[in-house]
Every structure is written in C-alpha cells, then in structure tokens.
Length: 352
Image (cartoon, rainbow, N blue to C red; front, side, top):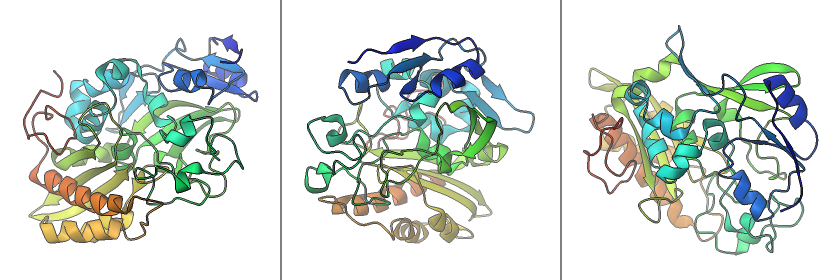
C-alpha cells in the first residue's frame, strides 16, 4: 500500500475542496476501497474521511411522500427500518441479499452505489485491464468470462456492476443528490454509471470532488409496494455476487398491469433498466405469456461477451420468475433466504 495523506474535514464544502485534488478518494466504511488499496488496485494519494460529516446518516420522510436517505446510512439500518421495508420491499430484499450481515452493518448507501466491479482480472494486477490501466487491454475477453456482461459491453471491457441495491433503485427512479465544486445538483441514478465504450476507466459521470450526499426515492415508488420483488441467482446461496438478478415492480388494477418497472443486475457495467419490456407489459393481464414476451424484449440486444451465452437465457428466466412473484404479491415476510429462487415464500420478518 502506498503512502497517503489522511484528512477528516468538518463540513461538506471542505470535503469537496479536499477531494477535488488529483489522486484523492472519499473514505466512508471502506468495505471496498480498503480491499482495493491493499491489493494495489487503487492507490489514492489522499483519503478524505467523511464519516464525521453532520447530517449524512439520516433517513428522512419528505412532505411530498418521497424518502431521502443520507449517503452514510448503513445498509443494515436501512433494510431493517420498518417503514422502509413496508414501502420499498424489493429494495429491502436486495439489501438483505448482498454481502454478509457483518458487511451490511458497516457498508454505507453511498459506497454501495459506487463500488467497483468484481471482475477477477480487474483485481489481479498481473492481468491486463483497461479499467485499471487504460490502454493495457482486457484479459477477460479471452479468459474466464462466463460471469461477464451480455449487455452494453465493448471490446475494451466486459465487466459487470456488482451492486444488488442499485437494481431496484434504478427500477423505481431513484435520484442522487451530488455536492460538487459548482454547488448541489441532482441526477437520476440510472444516469450515474457509464457503459464502458472506449473509456472503461470512467465508470460514472462524477467530477473530481463530487460527493453523493443523499439518495432520494420519489413518492411514486411507494405505489409498487404490493407487487414488488427482487430475485438473484448466484453461484452459492449467500455471500456471493449475482450471476443475474432482476427487480420487478407492478401496479395492477382490475386484473391488468397499469404500470411496470423492470431492471436487471449482473448483465452490464451498470444496473440495466428494461424500459421497452416495461412498455410491453402496460395493459397486459399479469400472466406467463406476457412475462415471457417482456423477457424476450428485455434481452433483445443481449449478446455473449465470451463463454456466457447461458446468461442470456438465464436472465430471461429470472425476468419471468421475478415478474411472476411480483404479480402474486409482496409477501408479508421477507423470505429466510432473501432474493434467492430457492427460498420459500415465508421466513423471517423483514424488520426482525
């Protein structure tokens, strides 16, 4: 690990100023950053500790019915908040299916949004990786790539974004509040992450010094609470990143779908919103044929980036399963194995 300067600013504006310098990085819980530093993958010259900044660890109910979540709110605290679990069950299911309980107790909302890919070649400094070292090449293209992207990838990078949390957030039109050198601005979470193109090292649209201070869910997101699920297929039941995942949310009135939301994880370098598939479900009866059609639309542009053709069919099936579970209705209890297709419909209370 290289030597670095450590700074603990007292205000958000001071933090932004300190982090705007080249080589600086924000530090919250460090559950991803510190691993990257130990492995020599990230080598910041300055760490800006934001853990003591005031007002960033609050969950606030807004007057318009929306919800504002501070960037330092812990994943576990958010998942076990009773009101949050009741109104945003798919997000709760995603949170509880990510990492281990110990990591969820430490990891923060803002850090989750910005975690780096888990591509093995990115983590291996002896391998060529354009994301880690621009222009080096991509060993994943001809390596062990069965878990890599099937949507939005390029010859420069085929890595995927690892977050469970982001997938239902994108489906429900979450917004991030960003404090930067030019003041505060808002951005749809769907627009935060970049596809690789020719510059895979540019993973998001944040500028030097930009700090995500909060995540906001609109009031409309609560309308899906009765029919919302997150489903995740992984190589082992717990403590694993998604091979493929899907968040499905429906509004059903008089036996028909009036509005649908659908997003996929584990398939691209960003959480993948399937808007065309959502449109195909509007006005449809919530049944197998409509869900199968939506799955085909959602993966219409998918293509294997290596030995991962199976992921396309797997993603279609997960979309159908997630939509089917959402149509049946959100369970009163989060399953004992959250988001797992192997779990039953009953289990631990989601606020236990």
